[in-house]
Image 1: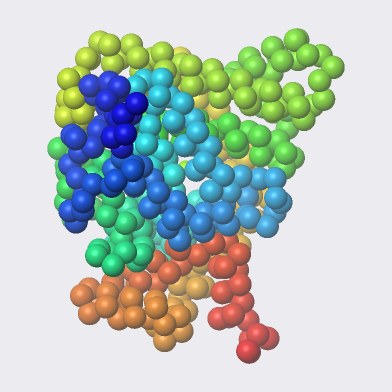
Image 2: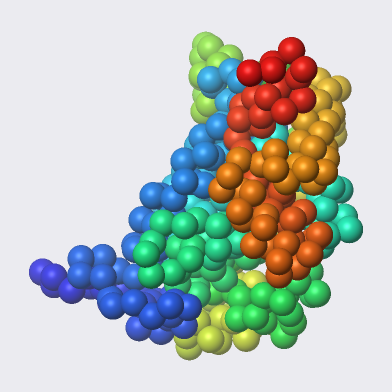
Length: 391
Ligand code: MG
């Protein structure tokens, strides 16, 4: 057996990413002794502080609502699991796929999308806030763990995968990873895959969490074709099965049909396009990893359902409204007085202010707030705004 850390890259499809064809790291480093370059990326992500904080950040439900709901950490692990299976099946680079999947949500604010919308509104006059750009900022700049460079110094392909979308004006500022948005090119297949796996993971776990929370009902979900097909089949085959267990079985089958469709469709597209290498993948006009039209429609239906019945549910909206007030209040307080920031962020603010003026200070406040977990944000809000807490 080969002891070369890259040995598993020898069996990949020609269009997969490999260390040999990588565009490399911003800061050149010697090759790792026991791991592939993308394994090293994945390991750096797992050891980052931002990754650990994902445990106490939420997507839809606030973290303290219950121990059974997904957090951004378990979501990221689910995305990685789904994406790795598909990567191996399609002979893509599993390590790179996993690294992108684990890093894709690092830049999320506390309180899910409500938090991101609030912080974006706060940053309106200072360049805005976007979680996807923030994920890149976390791995490129904010994690300070290595003596030789700022950030995690990840490979180009991992960074390319983290940056899923990007406004044109920002793309120009970003340089290398922004280029594809200017030139209208695609990212590598591993990045395309991690992106779709994200969608599969959250649609299905939101069904599961939605039902568990009682915010959506089986009767409502039965109107969604993707759910109905699996539910009816499970009920037919196992009429005695408890409701809870039946739901798990349905969700499992929903993930399975989506993964199967994705693998089959992507395989056909790859066969037809037959890209020679990752550069040909990038130059291809459309993504090569994707669902069939039929599955995409079904997926959109499910998404529409979740948006209407779950994300807009009055109880979720109440939670979101409170969360937004917490973010706005924190931002306002720190914007007005940088000396209220903890010392490391006060220094961060001073450095950014020197380079970018008021907008630099605002960016430092956004970095601080975006890095908070749900419960830290609530506690910090108490500490800086509750006059009863004077100590
Ligand atoms: Mg995600």
